[in-house]
Amino acid sequence: MGLRAAPSFAAAAAAGAEQRHRPRPCPPPLALLLLLLLSLGLLHAGDCQQPAQCRIQKCTTDFVSLTSHLNSAIDGFDSEFCKALRAYAGCTQRTSKACRGNLVYHSAVLGISDLMSQRNCSKDGPTSSTNPEVTHDPCNYHSHAGAREHGGGDQNPPNYLFCGLFGDPHLRTFKDHFQTCKVEGAWPLIDNNYLSVQVTNVPVVPGSSATATNKITVIFKAHHECTDQKVYQAVTDDLPAAFVDGTTSGGDGDTKSLRIVERESGRYVEMHARYIGTTVFVRQLGRYLTLAIRMPEDLAMSYEESQDLQLCVNGCPLSERIDDGQGQVSAIVGHTLPRTALAQTWPGYTLETANTQCHEKMPVKDIYFQSCVFDLLTTGDANFTAAAHSALEDVAVLHPRKERWHIFPSSSNGTPYGGSDLSVGLGLTCLFLILFL
Image 1: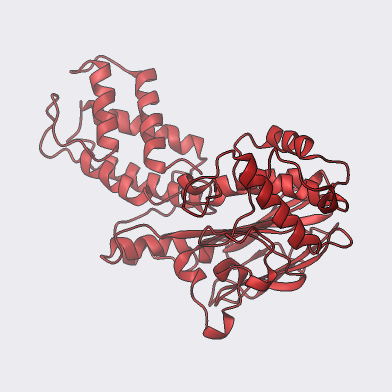
Image 2 (image 1 turned 120 degrees about the horizontal axis):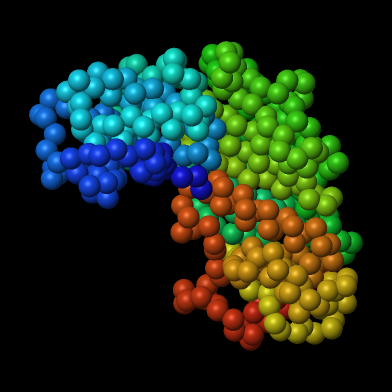
């Protein structure tokens, strides 16, 4: 995930002060410590007494409040951060006379200048305000979500959800449940009042019920003055950097409320829907597609009763799952299977070689590692290693909670499987029997 705005400022301001320090009433180390504490909103008094009318602490507190909910990995960060910096600069200018000779004030001014240069922020332009009526922007979800927060509503930042689909295919739902499914044909991943995502899956290996995604359709529904309906469609070997109507953005003005960014030609695109705070990644790895999405919970859960068939919300139907019965692919490492179960599923890989190849890309033996091994044994396609690896990378970028990035399988009593050869061997045997019988 991206770095939070407040710590970034503190570090930059401290660095600027260290490079340009002049003789001050307080020693430089103490001054830097005071600045850090102030940036975190913790400074109430110090050894260097500042005049009562110097309001630098209020300026810094307001800046922290305006930026604490921002995340550099999300579209719209630079615009909102620059607005907050300009507001911070204006506040320091208004209190400059009262703060003359104040070390914290001068360090803050230097830090603001450094950050504006780093972020290419213009000195002239819109500024943030603690007044929600002023900051409200109907086509910027982060802006009006922050306005609701400061307006006395929910005191917590908006909660975001993550969903991902990769491999043949492995699904991570909004609830962080992990499933391996069949779901051949067209299935809805998401279908709410703001966004629809449908995937089409085809068989990977003859005689197996395992499938993989070869088509993805994303529909951004019309939203007031922010954007008309936009449809994006990708199929194997055709991953366009535009919507089906040929456009690459939606909405009016210089700052588009919806846009497509091509990261790797024909292989990786990102869609940023600023007006609904949503980011979508689509990749092609080998012959198949992967998808990852981050969306605010209040929007993701805004749907009618008739729209309840959504894989990201409720997972795959029980009849379509091919996992180990616990909603997870069993740890697939280090145990041999009966040759009858492996006759159709061993195209060039053994458990040992699959384990080695996947471990090179994913040193943590979590569910993504296990899915990689499972896919190699099932298909013999080395591209599934890259699919599992990139899926985990997308989690690190889009998932809002770092402690949940990795998922580990649990035994029936809730304890980790660890490395038990017996349990993983039995789990793998069951998986292959389900898959090929």
